[in-house]
Image (tube, rainbow, N blue to C red; front, side, top):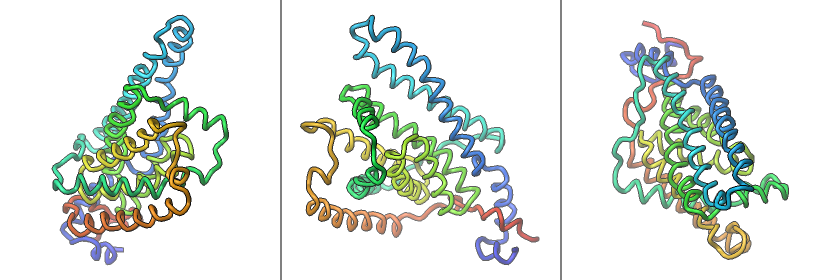
Length: 299
């Protein structure tokens, strides 16, 4: 076991690694608990939303205009509760909260990840159709996404900011201190998918989460992750403004056009990943954790 560890990191890092592995938040168990805290926060904050809707929907003519604002505030409160819990647990387990990694990144990273995100949208366009969507669920989705300013602000601004702070800035940051990068990114992507609470969003969210997690690992900053998330959400939101009901790329372009777009997107996405892989090197402290089963290094 000691020989395995010595191949992974220098001997003088062994003690520091062991300390980080024991103290970092969250581990797998902490991530699962945090998922239920997130769901609980959403449920708790949804109760006053439902009460207000029942009271004002039939008595207040402008309620339909105010409801999106209420939904936005409820979402912010729910995610804030989750973030407060995660920060509190981090302080308790690690002794202090090390903060959210939002350091500077090379300027070229921003357009690069935006291009990668656009390519990924095309590639993931059909993943939500892997599971047939019942008619009532489809109607629910159509009713939930509106063209009002508060819904757009929620989807394009607050969701990327708050979800990336949680999923990458706290969850993945802690996991990278407990596990090797591949395992940490995979777990964080599962968490990101799970908090969407339905398979039609969870499937593309999982694959998107893998890309987001990898970008975070490489850059050690949530800033490019926020850009990716906002680019994806803004692009998908733009479908609401197309004539008729929202459509996917396949229905708009047809099979030949979509296959051609996928071919180009694969090449573009691969090129973006290759450039980031070659030009961005994770900092020395990005992921020094060993797998738990390796045990402590001998001295």
